[in-house]
Length: 179
Image 1 (cartoon, rainbow, N blue to C red):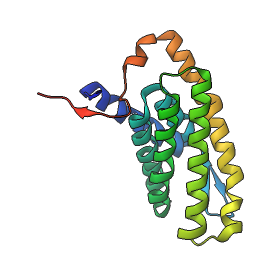
Image 2: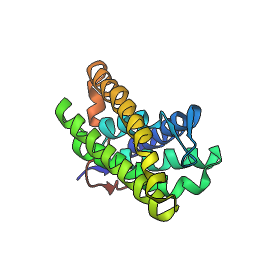
Image 3: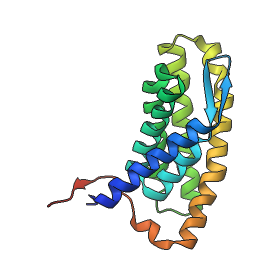
């Protein structure tokens, strides 16, 4: 069973910060829903595929939710936490320590989950209706494509330049280190 070490904690904290900055730095508003698209998915996919589902889930969920809060979109933070958390979890579960095909499967699963959660949340929780929720599917798809197109090659390049990166991360289960 993988252990959650001090190194893992540090990597997780750094990846949360990276995702938050990428989400906050450049935002494109979506007038139909009051949301926005961003480059945070690059960080979500990178952290999930490079470091695994646990770090990907924490970095994706917390990083994007923090950006929502500091950007003035605090009402979106709970939905964002779930959508991007599951996105990172699935991308890491299917893509971590895998070849290109596994990474693409992880990206696809994460993308589908994130888009579906936002669609359902906007429709049923935020009351935007079917049309309002549907208006954000396209921008969310673009956001995910950009995240995968940049995030996956970045993981491959870093793996090539620094192969020990595959030893960092937490697998599908974890336990606290003793002492």
